[in-house]
Image 1 (tube, one colour):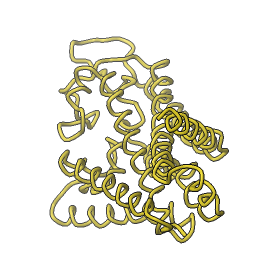
Image 2 (cartoon, helix red, strand yellow):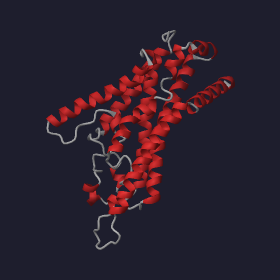
Image 3 (spheres, rainbow, N blue to C red):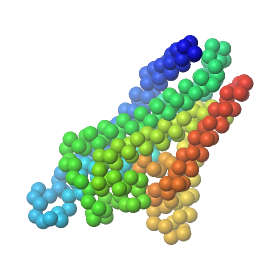
Image 4 (tube, rainbow, N blue to C red):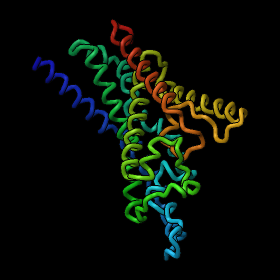
Length: 290
């Protein structure tokens, strides 16, 4: 048991070093943080310029100038849209191709001689989840820190919802108007969960992928194609924004889609987790990767 534990620890450490020292990880985190900094640099001067210098009445509108309302997932802007459009790719490029590339190079054959196949695959998925989650969390935290350094932390008022757009359909909206810092924390962790699950799912597709471009790009394009169809159908039926049928929409609370109902979101998230588990099960059987 001690040997097995030490072997597992060594494997996890090795894979984390491989993931976090990967130049692609640095590049993708850098690109995501660049979006976060650019968004903050855009909204901060605007908010400071428009912010009332004096409070003339009890109901002076202050909520829109709060750092919580200017946060990347809450403040709708072209930078935010590009950021959340590219995040699924940024979360998967650094490490989610590793199993496919190692198998193609014959490295997996050498690994399977030394350690159990299930241990190796499980470690790959675990590190994929952590890497995707980190790439999703870091820019959101950075963006909030920058905003908090320049803008006041006004408590959002529910009667100013028209200026914010966070309503009862948005996840954790009750926290946004009562404990906004908990809203930021919860939404950041939720984003990390989503991008971690997505990165893990992409890693598990090594069984069926033909090349690394298809491995990363095809599921991404398929998701947004599904969203495009759903939006057109929803608008045709009289909706306002368009129903989101993808977990990738959820991190952008101010995005162009209505939020997935919680039950649908949990179902979609569970679907990807189950599909990942099935892919991993088949990969763990015999020489299915060959």
